[in-house]
Image (cartoon, rainbow, N blue to C red):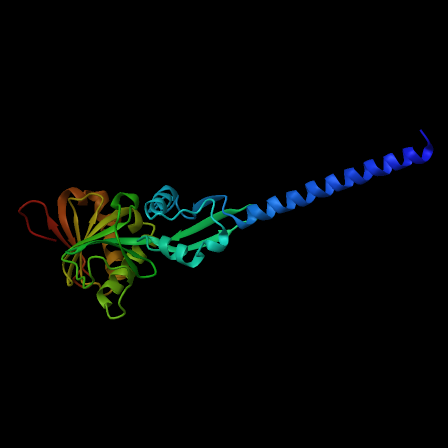
Length: 267
């Protein structure tokens, strides 16, 4: 074989290898671009699910399936991301949903929830109220161990209400301030379990002991009244106060009026 013939064979081999390499290279790019343009999988992330387990990723996936919202296999150009976000935000506890397309074709649904501050038991149903005064219906009361407000609760919203607190609702705004104070307080955050409303001027706190009633009257000067009630635990409880008294009343100025469990005079 002549040197020229060998040289031509080598050049032909190199040329073929280059063509094949280019083909595989461009084919890989096309497949990669195709995977970017089409939804390969859906990843649902509930950002605060450990501290605030009101909704779970599986429940969102089931909702999408029941709503016939099929995402895997669809071109991203055919998916209305804004509408998808709003569909997920229709969940009672969902504050915001961000739909994000990743480079590998994954559709990420990143969900943030409203954080309940307290739970309202009203004549039209149960509602959570967040620290930002957002009201939303309770779906599962066992998933959030927050302070409960029950009794004759003044509540002028519809049974399915979900939205911001009315700015004219001064009583509920005051209750939100008090529960916010209690939630951050090192003593009351652990001690108080329920707030009972007889009427808007007759409010009691039921502590963990449950057979003890702590009266504060209306919501005015609530911090001062709570400080007085804490003094009961500091001074009288070590002396057997929980066993002696059934009611501790902080409504009367600088005094604490304690009602004995037996038929004896008050102090």
